Amino acid sequence: MRLLKLVPDNTNIPFLRFRLPFMALSILMILASIGLVATRGLNFGVDFAGGLMIEVRVEQNLRADEMRAVVNGARAGNATIQNFGDGHTASVRLPLPPGDEAAVQQVVSRVQGLITQRYPGAEFRRVETVSGKVSGELIQNGALAVLLAMVGIAIYIWFRFEWQFGVGALFSLAHDVALTMGFFSLTQLDFDLNIVAAVLTIVGYSLNDTIVVYDRIRENLRKYRKMEIVQLLDLSINETLPRTIVTSLTMIIALAALVALGGEVLFGFALAMLLGIGIGTYSSISIAAPILIWLNVKSDSFVAVTKPGQDGVQRNERLPTRK
Image 1: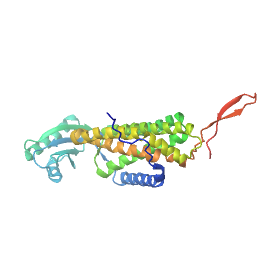
Image 2 (image 1 turned 90 degrees about the vertical axis):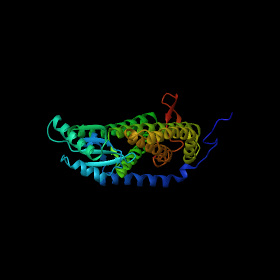
Image 3 (image 1 turned 90 degrees about the horizontal axis):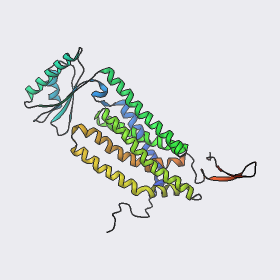
Image 4 (image 1 turned 135 degrees about the vertical axis):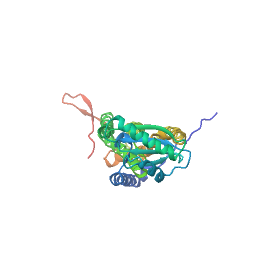
């Protein structure tokens, strides 16, 4: 029985021929994502924004403006209503009332009573409260976690390969994170701790994919010392393409099932992961390898040469990277 091959043997796709359009597209998408986050911002969930969040499901078709009018009847501050799922579920977000836990419970009881009165049989799935101080700390810690992860990864690749590879990996990871943030700014989906976990997972996956490509590039730099760098990079990407396609496709199938069937709690996380896998695969092929050319990596940049020492003994020394 013959094994199924998604990528035929001897595949030779000239990826590097399109490196300029790929890079231009990536830079435009990064700038667009930064612009979206700067102008529209992120729709922070209760984890980051602080306040009170009530998730409710009703039997009728739920209209955000109608639900907002009902909740505002509790006089607990301006309510933010967001529909999600099948149109019967919404999250109700309110500012935290002044006072202790008893004051919070009074607001929750009033809001739930008004919703039940308007929507008989309403189901309250969860109630969450986060103080403003805690939410501010969570934003700082979440951003710091992503930043430290990216810098640590770049330093690791620098020592594992060469500094050019570290710069390429860091740019690829910044590309993946920026586009993910831009997507959440565009769609205004809740951005909470689950999404931070998804971003960190995307960083790890993209790194793994990039290291596989970089490792093959390093092997081929040793093997084909006279090959043109563009041809060598194309060869390395095509040699790792079957592994990249199979791994990414497996992840995409699993995450698509979670997006469709995982429910509202896992929807944001699964969607962020699904988007990140696609972006990470693209960046490993179209950014991580081509950027080495602009960093002046040549086929003989890291070739060890033999030079006689003062004592006449032959020693191997690495040629410096060409400027």
